[in-house]
Length: 412
Image 1 (tube, rainbow, N blue to C red):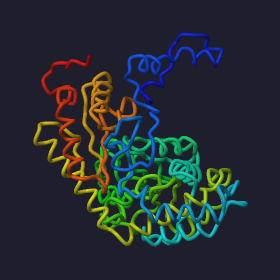
Image 2 (cartoon, rainbow, N blue to C red; image 1 turned 60 degrees about the horizontal axis):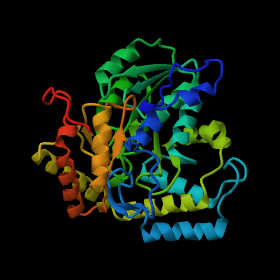
Image 3 (cartoon, one colour; image 1 turned 180 degrees about the horizontal axis):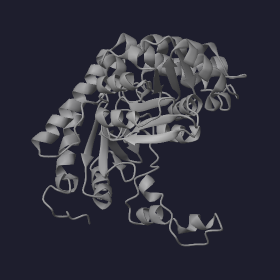
């Protein structure tokens, strides 16, 4: 949606409300039946969803392990709802804490091989709170060019000097770190799995670079938890949990709930517990959300094959797309991105695939280069995945990269 957010120069710049009337891009797409956002979906989200009388294969979800409808997750949420009610009505710092939050923290810390963890209200607020607390205007923060928006927003909130380095380029990161004064604090921030590309961070090279330059490292593993290393995430995948200072995660993907957490040393978590504004001044995760995440984590620990299955399903799709000549962004995770020549082709391909029964996510600049982002679940069947490949193949011209043949495809 970010490509639609640019404001027109029309209107009175002194009147803040004038920008509302000048924003017409979304309404233009609605009028053209090409608006792909805020679609109300019915029922539980699983490998298929419903919208009205239409059944859709869901390939636009981060429900990687397919646990949002798991009986144990639902039972845990219901039990917490009955025991605690719908909300704690306050922050964990004051009246919003429960033993569920603390159980989840202990089990997450153990699972991520860290001494301690701290649960916050969302993954976004976790990154906002951690970066906004750890960094100060005296410090320098180094962000991968493809880092998630919440990481950039947290860095901005801190007032630290923001330095970008090219995506997954540890050598460029090293050169950037060399230019920082010796007495400056420095934090490197990367994703474990990049959400728009689906590729994995070159963590060994990043860790080596941080060590050489005295930098601390934060790893946002929102899309790695539940996926890599039989679910334990990117740091465990490379055997580098001890070398990563802070790991942030979200519950809204593999853990089938809503919330987030940071894991690290006892001292770091204790400090964040008493200083992170997004924790102290925001209501706690609801008991039902917390219980659902805890139940999902326990299922993941007991059934690591779920992580293997979702990887196998995505690999099945990648092989199928390669066989029919559809280009994908290189990845080795459940995220399979299909590049397009531009925004019109992205929206047209999305529209056609939707009407063919496949739900995908259109991605537009400046979030990333134009593409359709597809993602897969452990609960998808092979028949469903083969149908996705078939639908993608039918839009092959629209899904080709700009340099494919030099011609713009028909987008009528």
